[in-house]
Amino acid sequence: MRRQRDIIQLAHVLLGLCERQAEASAPDAQATMGEQLRTMAGKIAGHFPDRTKVEQALVQLGAVQNSDVYSGLRATMDPANDIRTVRKHQRAALKKLSALAPALLDATAPVWKCVGLTTINRALVPHLITLASSPDEPQLGATADKLLRFIADVFPEMLKSSSSELFDVSELRGSDVRLAEERLALMVKFAKAVPRAVPGSTDLQELLAGLVRTGTLRQAKYAAFLLTQMEGSGALCGVLAGDMVDNLDNALLERRAPSFAALARFAQYAPLAFAIYADRVSQFLVQTVLMGTPPPPPADGVADDKVMADGKENAAPEWVERESLDDAGLTKVYAVKILTNWLVGTDRHALTRDGVQTVLGVLRALVRNGGEIQPGTHSGSAHRPHVLLAAAACMVKLARLPHLERLLSQQDALSLALVAQDTCYEVRARFLLRKLVPALVAGRIHVRFVPTLFL
Image (cartoon, rainbow, N blue to C red; front, side, top):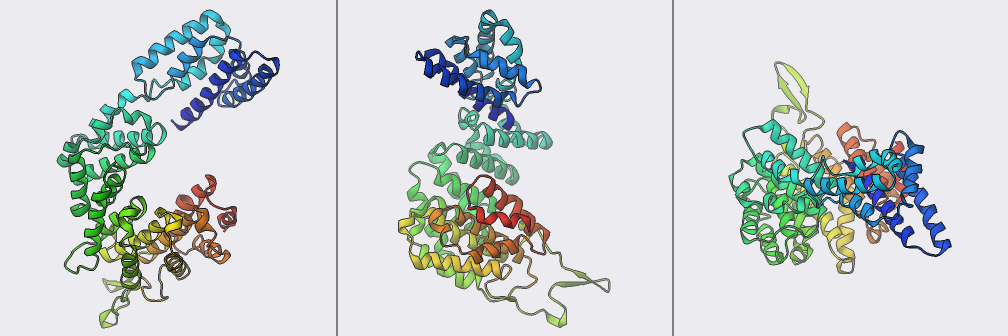
């Protein structure tokens, strides 16, 4: 699908050059268009086996000078068209091209077959949504959900026409927890790909607000993000953020991690709703959550990281999945995210020097001390590698913003290099492959972080 999208983008440029060449009257302009056309034809032809034949035919396409052919081929690549419309334009355009230049049709047929959206098409989306929401066939539903995620990544425009089915409130209410989480995850992908496209219905707002307050960790963080993407939801985000801040130190709550996860989303995507609580929250997170009292020493002389079983000592696992962490461990991970997201989401002119330095100081301590602010306080704890990974990822996140990247020193870059050499495989692999490499490939962070890849 990504290969098809890449070729579609090149084909749009090619057809635009063909149209401009047909309209150009000055010889110099035609020569310039011809050179650009040859360059683009070469890029497209590089994706096909018979490169020379395809390249020559695409260059000659500019000589056809027929707007019906160009507009028809462009319509076959439009994600907003259903399969009937795509087929209709495909037949008409290729028939016209065959009449004007039969040799070109044979040579370029692989290109038009590749770029025509006849396999992955918006007409599939409603059916895939139905399958993904059905508990009757879990394997088929999981496959449909995966395909929908690919479509959201590559062709998000296809989901626009099915937004009513995607954001169906009854599906979220009637689903079990896992299905509701997967549907919310797909909604988030759509909202990130198509900003401000989340429908702002009252029913949906009320449902999402309920999930923020009482849902699982995944439900709460997804619902919080979706609320921030709705028009006119600022007041509701402020109310929810205020409720969660008021309960930060509520000892009667069994689980605080879902609230922390939601608050991390509000901090970045609804900074105005979070701003009035920022200082209070930062102080609590640093002093109470991240620098909290270390666990008491184990009783009876049994080592903290050992478990006695059948007379043998079994070492505690070096890594456990985040979902397996206890509530205290999860709150530490999301405390790091809240602090960082506040810096990322807030306008640079609204940030204070003390606030920025507080967050940077926390991240530096966590990275240099292996997931602890004070060395040795939580050695052997299951959450330590997760907190280290979160802090390192947050430093990379800050490095993407020029006004914050300037505050990162060479020592900070060296500290991240040590994370790439952490003794825990999951920490170094996830940091490199999921955080550092994508940021470097996309050119979002400075090249001074490249040497870390070789360590």
